[in-house]
Length: 260
Ligand SMILES: Nc1ncnc2c1ncn2[C@@H]1O[C@H](COP(=O)(O)OP(=O)(O)O)[C@@H](O)[C@H]1O
Ligand SMILES: [Mg+2]
Image 1 (cartoon, rainbow, N blue to C red):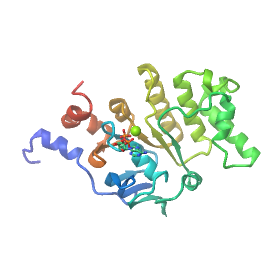
Image 2 (cartoon, protein in one colour; image 1 turned 180 degrees about the horizontal axis):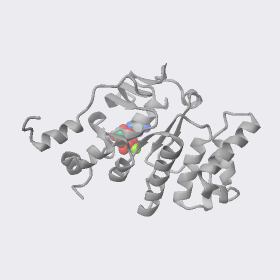
Image 3 (spheres, rainbow, N blue to C red; image 1 turned 45 degrees about the vertical axis):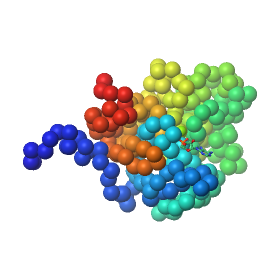
Image 4 (cartoon, rainbow, N blue to C red; image 1 turned 90 degrees about the vertical axis):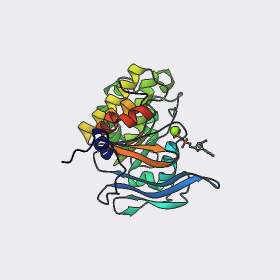
């Protein structure tokens, strides 16, 4: 080891890395936007099986646009998205869902006038097999005892945190290989945010669920993530383990509101 200053050593651990072709899910040189305005520029992201990977970055950095482009809500201008051996670039959301990737969008997406059970069943609208639906229901209620207790209750009468769990439960009905979460903590009180993150971590640890997450709440998001990507103006800025990003003076200064 040479006498490298410590700031530089830390910087190396959060430097943008060459893409890893062994990753399960790979975003390669993605360019996407709205109309003629490009928001995402040559973005690269890797997600390995069993990982929680978090994108952080300032408001308007293009985080949600990455999800929309990856999930086929908007067509990428160029670049590719690979899932295992498949090139899923530009596929429509229904086909991506069938491939085993589910998506919980930013903001509330429960149906308030429907029961917990009915909301969960909507997660299986592409499946007709009654017994398969029953098995999925049992599996998800097993994962979320709280939802089992409330299965006959109208979703709209539940707390914000419970509704977020319901949205995640609904996305797990299809037993996805990857769960995409756009700002699961948005609009939740700090204590409830902690519960939601604890649940995401529990699903990852106990069920091996692979999670691709966006978080505005960078500190807590990174704390449960194996790796994170810092996006700035639609470009890769920093990446590293959740711990390396949290410990980086630069990331703290720029994105975490200083050291804690
Ligand atoms: N449907 C849309 N049409 C045009 N511009 C959009 C649309 N959605 C988002 N944008 C713009 O794209 C940029 C990135 O937005 P977004 O991906 O939502 O950022 P983030 O999720 O990081 O806050 C912003 O400048 C936003 O105004
Ligand atoms: Mg967003």
